[in-house]
Length: 88
Image (cartoon, rainbow, N blue to C red):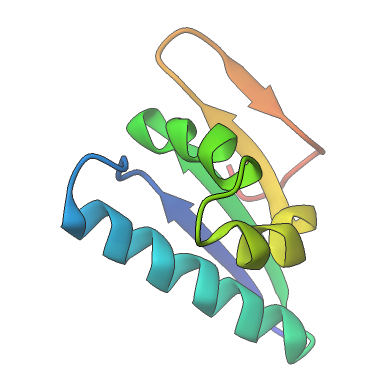
């Protein structure tokens, strides 16, 4: 089993950002399904994804399947940790 950190820092305002988040969530899901330990951190502009993914976004189903791997939300104002992480 490998430990894999995934940092998401792109927002949803561009096609590039959407593609990067799609790839990150898909990779996290596949790694998790194969028994690897995955930590996902949302940083800066990417924090806006959390509400969108939870409220019916097309990636919402994938997010629901891997949200137990989300360990950290970082914004310029404050940090929200969902559990203790050795990733940082």
